[in-house]
Image (cartoon, one colour):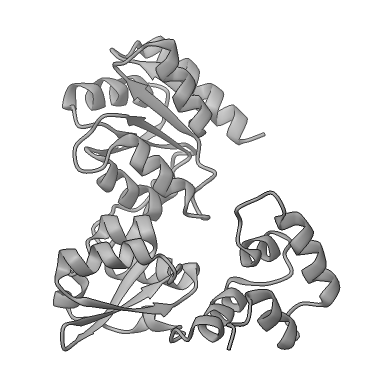
Length: 276
């Protein structure tokens, strides 16, 4: 028997009307967006509706309110913070070499295959809303992140693996009253950004563990922080490099070595644009 499509499931459960489904199908033409995302953008369904439909359509267990539970540290250690944030996944439990994994996208078979090989475990996906997974990650993974400085209006996150760059940028920006937070790679920067929601991120492109582009893509995949402007730093100053970064969606580009006056000008421009 053919598997029912998500639109049909939502329609049968009276979550949407036939007219809303027809409109969504028209909008979907020529795009690669799933119908659930189209309907969510139309503001006719919620994340929970999509999760429940995926559960019905593919037979995944639907999990919710798990963020309030306690999890053994050994289970949490199976998935590192970087992977949890980048893919919106959360480890629930392990039974007989099977990892039960909350996923916002349980259809990501490549990720499941990669994790299964890396961990030598079978992956059993459970569908959960992105908001539920984010809440669980913040509660159980991001406990070492400092609180945002409420006394200063602008919080800036600097991400670079070179102390000389971090210190130079911090000195220039602190003179203007900005509150500065620092990270030494993209993974650390992603953790801080998820917790603090800074007003601006300035990141180097080439870094170990997670580079600036990988961090930027992870930020863009997180609906809560995708609107934070990100300025790229790079020692590669060719016009092609700048063009590619701006095409990806970076707000601006600053070549290395950093010129303090240029840095201040670009930062103030980004803040003004964000506050419009």
